[in-house]
Image (cartoon, rainbow, N blue to C red; front, top):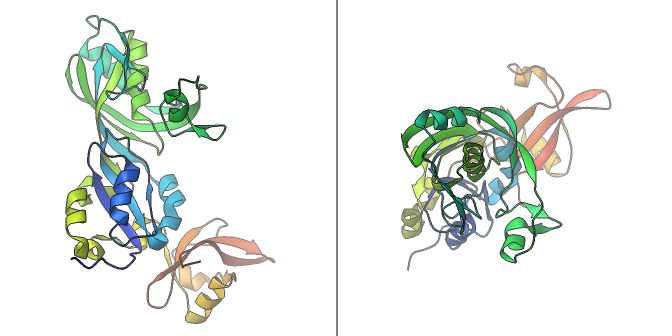
Length: 308
């Protein structure tokens, strides 16, 4: 019987397979001795690709991972069919002819995704209404409210077009529903559309080339430690601030650390700067932010990276 590794602290970049939910993938990795575990950015069961698994102290950086970077998706849609989930896993609610649509029409509508826009949230999603996920309300046959959210699309292009299907690639802000993009395109073209395939190729700051297959991770638990990426690599644009052992003890007790210009020469002081505090042995101690306290510039703890 394989010896399970100790609790790890860092990120595991997983290549989620099609089929299981993100939560089911996390539950399987949890059985490898990882009691403290989470993830950044849910993927639908139909989707595959980069799923950032957070282990140990890294579970505390989820909000910063989600806020700091974009995601890249490769998707395929099919014209002429609308479903209740806006993808191929749902029940068909309408069909319509699509013979009036040309490849140029598809390219034009995909390019229209660019920029900042209000996106309708799918009725089958984890978004909540009065504390209940929309998908639970939908499955119970209850009416779901129309919810929207602001998303940012920085790149959008058609990769191939073989009507009634078209494959596209988008770079977007965290939380964008790719199903919604396909659904809205079908509505604008007057024939409906559903998402049939989806791969997340990149979730800041990691690409699918760094991702590990779920089956391989589960089959080789002894290799988990070598597959885990340190917290410092997860936030590559955050500068590193090394503190002394005395300061580390103070930080763990809620104390601030004086801002010393010489220690951060490449980063002039401004309120709201963020950094990763490192102990003398390079162990991440906390996520920190600069503030003015009692007229003095200091580093304050945003989130401690030690066990509570």
